[in-house]
Image (cartoon, rainbow, N blue to C red; front, side, top):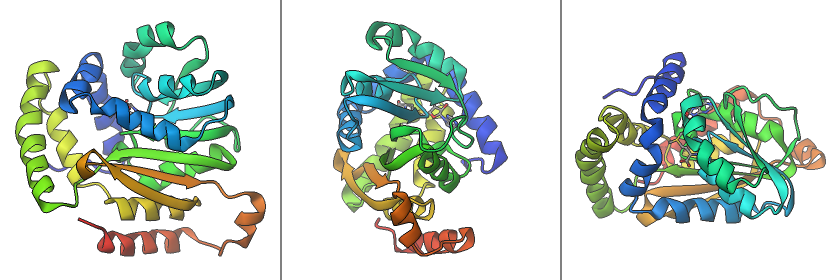
Length: 266
Ligand SMILES: C[S@@+](CC[C@H](N)C(=O)[O-])C[C@H]1O[C@@H](n2cnc3c(N)ncnc32)[C@H](O)[C@@H]1O
């Protein structure tokens, strides 16, 4: 199944998440055997949010990561942005229950964030960046709205590097998950898109290169979930660090990013 690219991607992804919104959380827990909670907790830890201050969760869906982040920021606030309103709506009950008035949903496109530069102490995303029509542009937006020195954290699915796990993962992900999606969410197409979008997405090393090309520095990653999840961390350079960086025109950035894609781990 070819995953739509460019402008077609935006509409496709938006409509798909709109259809599965009400069953999204249940499917996630079943599909990951509840491990998704721990992965989000790991993302929050590396984001190092300040006790007070402001954080942004991009592609928040039903707001799970935003709520987890707010727990670590007892005197802070979290904005949780997504362009699929039915996902935000499905997250409303939990937001009211657990948000303590410190988490706010915002309907917004990750490729055109409606925030001024240097606004957030940290910017996080979980399982969202893979769905963007332009990954590097998504990171440029995240870097733009982060404060200098602020962390940008990306949690995403990937293909395990171990061939044995990769094989098992493929059987599970391509064989079972679409059927489960048909049964639970009534939408096997959405859960066919899921493994396809992971297979066609940048491998962790190439994703790290995309983050660097977007202007982030100190980018590193580690794998979780038997290698099926990658947790990337980068930081927005301070103005003096940015001046020291070599100029990196867009073309050069994407070129090195493409070269890195060839070096990716499998
Ligand atoms: C797989 S869900 C992840 C939701 C949530 N972050 C989580 O941890 O479960 C991906 C989310 O990204 C959102 N998304 C995809 N592309 C987007 C874009 N261009 N702008 C804003 N949100 C987007 C979708 O609407 C969807 O809610």
